Length: 294
Image (cartoon, rainbow, N blue to C red):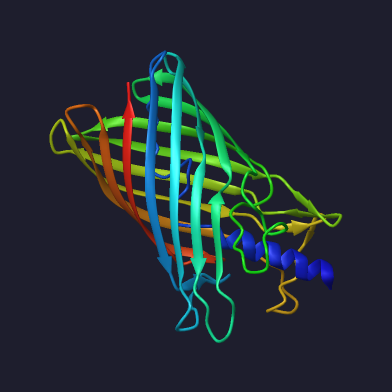
């Protein structure tokens, strides 16, 4: 029983960290930089939601007074090692909160989340074909170390992500797409190996160039995950006797725009809205970004 309770608690904690944004896939493109190029892109993402998608993909409302609110600050830093090959790191600062209801305590968490280290290599210029690999470091407080009234900021385990990315001019704009696989390693707690389901990820988007400075974007991204396990076995679903806990999935739509200022600073705005999902929070997000680079 304790094994099941612990495993289910971990699944819930991991699902709570899922939002309408992925640090590797959302709005990324196949483009790479030249040797010596250095750049920084800081984003502000505001999340809100008061429902979840259940295992069957149905949206289930929370208690009337319960609501999730999150403020995320992802920071992308990249450097061009040689032409067409770049490395980067993406730490993220989080401020998450779930408001209390019916006597339940307020849950919140503030601090550094998990950190991605990544590399991109462009091996074909026209159309652009790029390979990207990423490693997620468990730098955020996880469910094991979080206090009773604290939301976990990280998953507590490492991920390895590999993707192929594609980009091509299309009419008065450009089309970009990415398809990848994320292998999620196990986390050991109290001699129990908990392994979240590995995931297929995707992104596809089109940017319409109004002029040399303004680009209007519409995109979609998401993932489809396999079932989590403990010690290699399925996890019993305590809410549905005789059934097992299933994997998470989501599909988001992301409209927005980018504006390039005369000094080279790029300002961005976008919205992330869930079209469908399973075993995740039903949240939407508004994002602002500012970037500078060679």
